[in-house]
Each structure stands twice: as structure tokens, then as C-alpha cells.
View 1: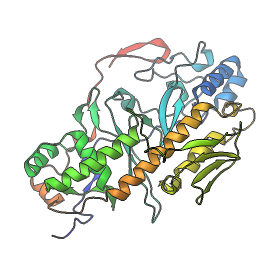
View 2 (view 1 turned 90 degrees about the vertical axis):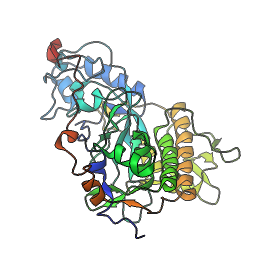
View 3 (view 1 turned 180 degrees about the vertical axis):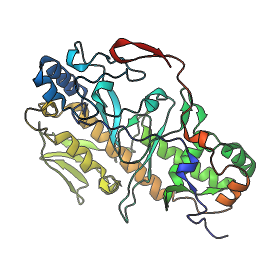
View 4 (view 1 turned 60 degrees about the vertical axis):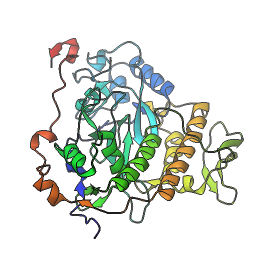
Length: 391
């Protein structure tokens, strides 16, 4: 049977029809690899007065210290204009800043040009956000990323797996799960469909596309590979480990302020100046996402210095121990993801479920209502200047 063509593969935009534009910060200082720096930046901002506070804030057309905005859903940041703000820094939260790079964000609506409140309203422990990378030609990196954290990656749109909090109402084409249940002989879950997409997504003429199969064995294999990938990408349960003898360790102490990162293939060692971590598999060092080597991007984000006199210049005086632990785990995750790709190639096309079949079954075209957010606004959210509105 011929393989599934691009036209036969289901576009991700139809598979998960509701999507939200990515968060746009408008300024870099509300994000940092460590939470302590964010608290120091907040304190420095509030100690400044008048024009000094405005300069430190870095105003844009969307946000100035005088902008009145409502509270960020699910978080307790203030709603009075920032020019009059006082009090402690809102508790920083983890966000995904770049592929496999988890950092911290001050969750305050006044600091974010376009926070996309609809994303924050459905964010909880059961939610999974999906976004696409932009792989370079010939790159073997993942096409899709999945995370439990609010993603700040640009430019692709963000697709929550569920349209409501509590893992309710899958964000899948209406009727798709019913059709798959008939064709596979067993009803898959929303996570199964996402796992399959992670294992099989391919570039299409209009963005990522997902070939579907009615072969139960191939489906099961793809879902198994995808669930392994999903676990490694989310890292929200048991911590991943490499077998003994292959686990990376710090072999020579890392300096207080490393400036350069290099890899020695013969030694399978990663050097941060004179600091040394080994063993580091070549697959982990070579791992790319969006055409960029993940480890280099991660290191650069922690060693880049902000311009003098800006809030972004407030950063750790020395390399924190937590960054070393995060780096060791990242190396482990990348090595294990490379193994998933190597040991489990994408399932071959067989018994394809074509777009023509989906149209005949009424799954396609996706109704316009499925592309709009569900109504989850059944509670009060604090509006500008402390006003409350029933949403």
C-alpha cells in the first residue's frame, strides 16, 4: 500500500484546532534562569521613582508603568498601575523559554505585552501545551514540543491538549476519537493521539502534519514511542536517569562564572571553561531543536549579560548549584530522546486514514466553533485597579 502523502496526512491545525498566539513579553527582564534574580529585579524596579522607574520598566506601546490591566488568571499579581505598585515580587513560575529550557517568569500581567489570558485559564497540572519548532533543512530535531509549562517560544501558535481545566474536553477535531475507535477497534485517549503525533509528525505544506493509521499494531508502537517522548519532554514526574556508567557527573569543578562551552568527542566530555562533565554522549551534544544546538542555547541563556543599568543586568554573581543539576538532567533527557529516535523509528505508513476518509466521516472540515476557546470563565478575575468583573 502506498505511503501517506502530505495531502493525506492530517494537518496539526485540524488535529488540534484551537490554538493561541504565543505569549509576547515585550521586555526580557521579567524572565530569568533563576528566581532570585527576578525578585532582585522587582525590588530594584519598585525602589526607583518617577522617570527612573519608567526607564527601568522598558515601556512599549502595549505596556507602560501607567497601563491599567486585569489580573493574570490564576495568579495574584497586583492590578494597580505599576507606577504606584508596592509590595513583594509575585511568586515566580516556571515557563518554557526555548526548546528544553525551563526558566522563571514574574507572573504579573502589567509586565507582559500580550499574556494570552486564555492560555493561563486552562493551565493546570493536567494540561499539555504543544508547539512546533522550525527545523533547519536536514535537521533531525523534533518537529513538535510538548510541555506542562506555559511556553514562551515564538513564532508558532500554542495548542493546549484540553479546552478546559481539569483535563476536560480534548482539543481534537470533533468526531476524531470516535472515528479512530471504529477503525482501530479500541478508543484512544487524547494523550494517545498527542503521543502518536509526537512520534509521527512531519513537515507539511501548511505546517506540521500527522499521518493517521488504522493498523492497531503500528498505532500501538507509535503511541508507545510518543508517550516516552512526552514523558521526557514534560519531566513532571520521576526524574529520568541513564544506566549506571553512562550517567553524566561533574569530573572537574565548574568555575564561578564560566564563559565558554565546548565539547570533546574523543573524551565525550563537556567543558565549561576548565570545568568538566562526563560522560556526555555525542547524541546529547548534537541534539538540535529549531535548527539550534540545545545545549549551546541553554548555556548562552545563563551566561549572557544584560546591558549595564538595566534590570536584566541583575543576575547571579556565581554559577548556582541548581544550574549544574539542571544541566546534568538536560544532558540525560537529550541522550534518552536521541535513543528513542534511534531505537524506535517513526512508524511506517500502513492502512492510512486519509483526509478524504475523514471528510466522508464528517471529521473534516473542522467546525469553526472548535477553533474558538471554550467558555471557562465561571469565576471572578480581578480587573484593573482592583475592580471585579464576573466573567
